[in-house]
Image 1 (cartoon, rainbow, N blue to C red):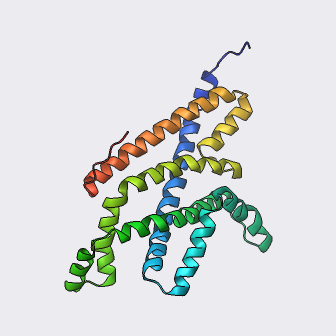
Image 2: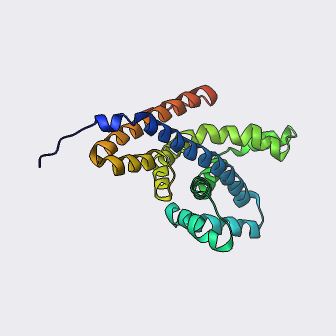
Length: 224
């Protein structure tokens, strides 16, 4: 094998790749927070809702946690146009990842709510707090502190998992890498550079999340 590595032809596209990394973070960030809202609503519905509502949420969780996110996005992007609903690639991927995330976070957040001590809930009731106030001042702070580490790891997983968006033409980091390697035929160099960028992304995200956890929730988390 007489292959000569030429990283210079890839590094000249570094600003383009960094732009893709920003899109990657956008997809992960939007999907995570919207999914967290769905997850919180789903968790409360499973714990406090009626039988019919619990059954609906259970069906949602079972379906979306037992089918690949990629298949779900395929349905949104390719099947919905048959009924007149056309989504652009970024929207389809973001919605798909959001719905998938919401299903997983429903169970994760349900566990966090169940871990709230009964004494804390009774104290909130004695103080005359409404359900919304109890959620805001008792349940959510407890969930944030208890589940901060696993939720942070889940977000990192989403950053890496967002690479599936390239299949649908989203120009995030992997999508832009495919574009570059197709044009210069330097696949090894291109994707090795992209791998390093992904490592930097996860390191930066991990450090940022650890600092936020220590500042906002007094959670001491190991960065690595």
